[in-house]
Image (cartoon, rainbow, N blue to C red; front, side, top):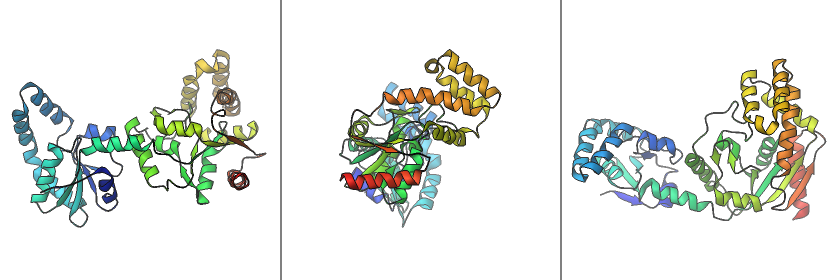
Length: 340
């Protein structure tokens, strides 16, 4: 008889026992428990066929079709599960914790692998994930105009023992029109939420957590509304770095990309830049004058930033004369001590 675990117990067990997601590859790609292995009972086309049979004919015929599809795969399922099992155990789930995970767990249990099933399936996990973002966190937001080195400052804070979540790293995007350059493809919104939850779950909720100031969206993904509201109300440290230093940082970060990709990024914001500024950027790109491009686009981003964030939570400025993330981290922590 299969053992069923509720979400929190299932996730706790997943620290030691591998997770098998038996949903279709398409479902898995849309979003899954981080670290889970996909052994699909049906591929995308097979799942569609079984679903159509269920709707048009009925459950009994759909089950028979499912058995015909799964039968030839059963031995490979067992072999794959045995290879990844830990001490003869695996964790299994499907969408609702119904027939797919139940039949897969039965197969493994009868073949000598102990399969523990997620009660109510991935659907219950998703409810748990979304609910978690309303839990109270002690967030501190690091803000500043584009090119202020916020990501490196956060990394320096982490090196000093602070809890940090790099939202842009989770999103595979740096947040601007140029933010996708050099990044892996972005996760979907659902997968981004799962990744963020996993990061939060690994931190101490009783200690402060640092995040970078972001818009609601980071590229094509969105920060969960409940978490976004907490970010808006959180204390902020805003980095003030001279524009010249920020231009130099942007040249180091983006100067390695080819002109075609840089021009495509400029064209994404041409309506906001305006026709003249866009043409100036294009002309500068043609002659390799990346500094002019950085100066023009920073003017746009600086104006946009003045309309963002500072009026919500309390805000303290950290004024720097030069680009030095380590110094910035030290000043922030010193200011935290004096203000506490």
